[in-house]
View 1: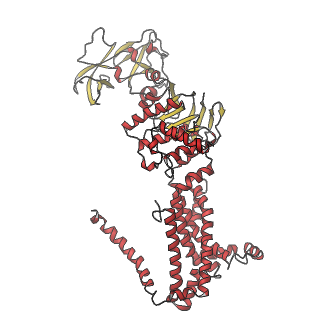
View 2 (view 1 turned 135 degrees about the vertical axis):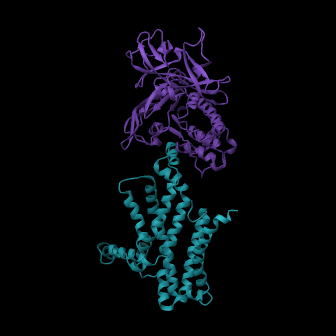
View 3 (view 1 turned 90 degrees about the horizontal axis):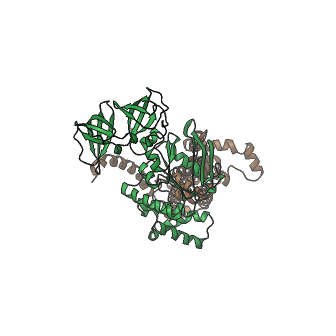
Length: 260
Length: 367
C-alpha cells in the first residue's frame, strides 16, 4: 500500500477534480427544467448544429493535413530560426481567441486587399462558413501540431534510418514507419483540435458572427433567454464532442488523450 | 574491395569526429572496427550507411562512389545496439520489409522470409510482435531482416552491447555462423576488444577519430603498432626506459639493462622510450634469485594488491622505480607486502619512442 505517501497529492488533486465536476453537475441538474428536444428542434438550433458539423471537421482536417508535416519537420530537424517557428506555433494559444479573431479580420476582412478580392470572387472570408473555418483553424491547429510533434519526437530516429537502409525513400519511410508509430499522439492531437474547433467561440464571434455555429448560437440564446435557454445546445455540443472523442479513442486504440 | 573508405573526414560544426580514415573491407570479409566510445566509430558507420554526408573523403561500394548517394540507393543494411524492429509489424513482416522495397514478389518473399527466420532459428515466432520477444530474439530478428535482402555490406553497430554477458557470447557465435553461412561482407563495430578479436578476420583500431592500427587480430595483439593499440587490445603494462646503446638496442628499465640482440634503434642515446609488456608475459618469483635459464630481466618489487578474477589472479607489483605492473598468475599468489621479483623476456617487450605514436626499432622484439 502506497496510500500514506500519496495522501497529500491525492487530496490536492481531489480538490481540482471536485471543482471540475461541480459545474457539470449543477449545469446538468437544470436539464429537467429545460425542454431539450424542443430547444433543439427550433430552426435556429438546427442551422447552428448543421454549421458546426460542417465547419469543425473541415478545420480539423486542414489543421491535420498542414500541421502533421510541420510537426514532423520540427521533430526531426534543426535550422536557423527554428525557435521563431516554434513560437509562431504557440502564438494562437497565447493570444486570446477574441483578439485572434480581431487579428484575422485585419488580415482577411472585407476591406482588406485579400478580403475584398475574395468577396469579389464570391467567396467572402468573413461572416461565412469559410470565415468560421478560418477562425477555428487559427485557434485549434496548434493542438495537433504540438501533440504530433511530441509523438514524432518519441519515435527513435534509427527506426527511420533502418527503413532507409532497407531501401525506402524518405516519403515511404514517413508513411510506413514514422506515421504509424506516432499515430497515437497524432490521433490525440486530432481529438483535441476537433474539440477545440467545434467549441470555438471568441475568434468565430469576431470573424463570422453569422452564420451561427453552436457556440455563437448558445451565446445568443444566453443573452435573450438566460442560462436555461443555453442548456439544449450546450448538451448537444457536449454530446457531439464526446461521441467524436470516444470514436477516435475506440478506432484509434488510443489509451489516453495524451498518449505517452 | 567491396567497401572502401578513402580519407574519410567528418566534422560536426567545428568538432572533428573522424579525421582522414581509410580502410577497406574485402568481399565476404568480417572486419571489426574497434575503439573506445567517442572515437568516431559511429560516424564512420553513419557515413557508410549514408545517414551522414562526410565533410571530406569518399565511400565506395563495389568500386562505385556512393559518398553522396542516399541510404536507400546503397545496398547496406544496419543493425544497431538498440532494437529498431517495427513494433507495429510482426516478426515476418519485419523480415519481409526490406525484401518488399527491393521488389521481391509476395510469393517468393514468403519463402525468403521463412528461409531467414530458419537461419536465426525463429520460425515459430514468425507471427509474434517484437514486444513479445526477448532481447536476444529481437537482435536475431534484426539480423534476419538485415541479411534477407542480401546487402553488399552488413553494418553491425555495437549489436551486442545492450545484452548481458552470457547472451552476448551466445549471440556472438550466432553472428559468426550467420556471416559464414551467408558470406555477407560485414563491418562489425564494437568497443569490446574480446568481441572483436573473437569474430574478426581483420581489425581496424580507431583512436580519437583516426585509425591507430589495421591488421589481423593476432598480429596486432602480438606486435601492436602504437602504444594505444597495445593498451587497448588486451591489457598492457607500460614501463619507462632509457636508451643506452643503439646497436644492438640496449636500454635500462626498472634499473636493469636490457639488450635486444640483432636490433638497432632510431632513438638517440639517453632518449626516453616506453616498453609495453602483456600481464601474461610476466612471471613472479618470491624473494628473487633467478636461475640462468630464467627470464632475461628480473625486476624487484613488492606486492601492492591482489585481485581474484576467478580464473586467475591479477597481482599488482610496485617496482623499486615506483612504477606499478600487473602480473597475471593462475597459482596461489604471494601476499600483499611480500617482496617479489617480476621476470620478463626481452623478446616480449614492445618498444615505443616517448611521445611518439609509432614503434621504434621496427619489430626488434620479434627478431
